[in-house]
Length: 125
Image (cartoon, rainbow, N blue to C red; front, side):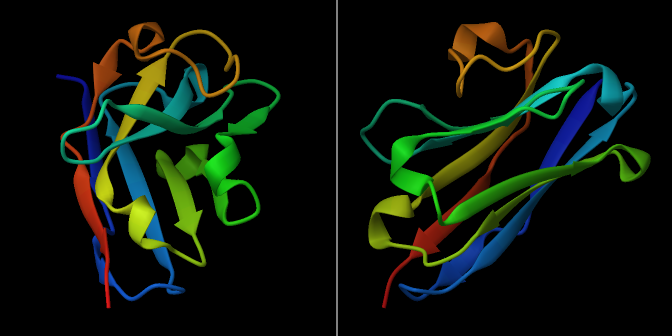
């Protein structure tokens, strides 16, 4: 069964950093683009970043540009989201998801066919 497992979330103070990982199993990561989404309590799921399968094209939502960096290591079946200078408004459950096509911006959730279970990120002093 296809799996995407997120890890690396936690509690961090404003200005701190976290690195999220998305480990893929039972499918070939290199054949898929991967997106990161987040959902805060009472809010809709929001696209954060996407990294394409072929040319590695990368997209970010404006609110995280310059602070977050997405990368992938196909040999390790893992996609990362490095998050620096975290703010309280970054608090959310973060999900990774796969899509067969290339990224078109951060994408529409309906473009993704499989999602992980999420990891909680809390930014608070």
